[in-house]
Length: 379
Ligand SMILES: NC(=O)c1ccc[n+]([C@@H]2O[C@H](COP(=O)([O-])OP(=O)(O)OC[C@H]3O[C@@H](n4cnc5c(N)ncnc54)[C@H](OP(=O)(O)O)[C@@H]3O)[C@@H](O)[C@H]2O)c1
Image 1 (tube, helix red, strand yellow):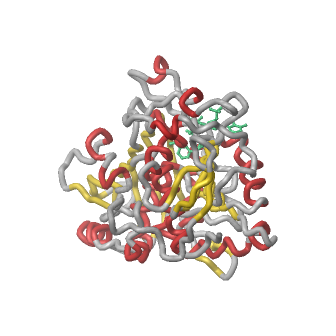
Image 2 (cartoon, helix red, strand yellow):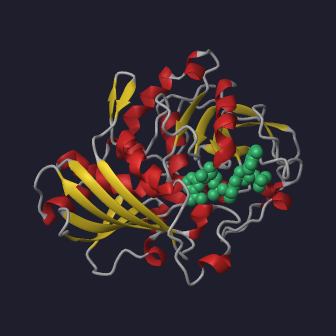
């Protein structure tokens, strides 16, 4: 991510009066206050790790379920990141997950079973909700966003009831973690040659199951060939993301996907084996060129979380590998390898992406940056 001196906040950013995290005093800051709903979970922790030095955003509120509310973050969380928990974040008191927290943008990383109602409530109270949960992904008026693929779908926000209500709140959803890497690899091929069919087998890391996740005794030395609800998501979300915005709705991209999803004993990084049938003929070098030349308009914006290079094709015969390549471009890159002819369809290849960064927290932060840059956040 480009967290360097060039990444000054956008010019229209006013100084904001926000409550100090540690001593409740009020300060003026020239950063946008953001909250994290479900901050103690796997995704919430990664959001904190990525936001702690963010040039535009400042964490001003953390929430959890009843069991965590009122505790300091340090006491409530089972911190599982490889960097230390920042002291000032550890002191923040966990708030109830209610729409009265001091920020304008909330990242929702609450469990999927409660996310739907919570996110609607925040949107109706004027918050910009960036949802990492599945509850609203397929709602007709909610953009299901991969910024490099369908930034134009943001216009759907204007059709949301809560946005029109006068308070200005809305929901934007991030896709399933296995879908994020998959659609990025598919997008250049859909644009250049058209896609007809995709067969994908996923090998998904243990962090994808959250905390506490799959018991270690069940997962070590093993593969679990079932992830509840996952295959359905992988089979329907890409069509919406690759779809075309027609005035105020998305016309889904016509594509048949068959997915088989597996949990494997890798801590981070989802690996996917993919076979594709194209609409038009393309050679191996055409496909590699399409990946190499993929440069969507959002890259011009040089947003702080944009990777310099989105897709990386490995020529090595046994790459990509989760342990070696998940952190490419600080976890925002997508690795591809082993492109070869497929006896059933046209071609097959492997994809690797970091489920906690590209597939979750990093992808959500990039969405927030795009919303700010496009003027969707008002003060
Ligand atoms: N892990 C991934 O790779 C990944 C990727 C993309 C999207 N997602 C989605 O992101 C969300 C979070 O996933 P995760 O892996 O971080 O799950 P997790 O580790 O189980 O964390 C769940 C979080 O939700 C909070 N929570 C639970 N019930 C709540 C309630 N009634 N009110 C308020 N907060 C509540 C928990 O707070 P307490 O600790 O206080 O109970 C915790 O902070 C899920 O919807 C998941 O589907 C996950």
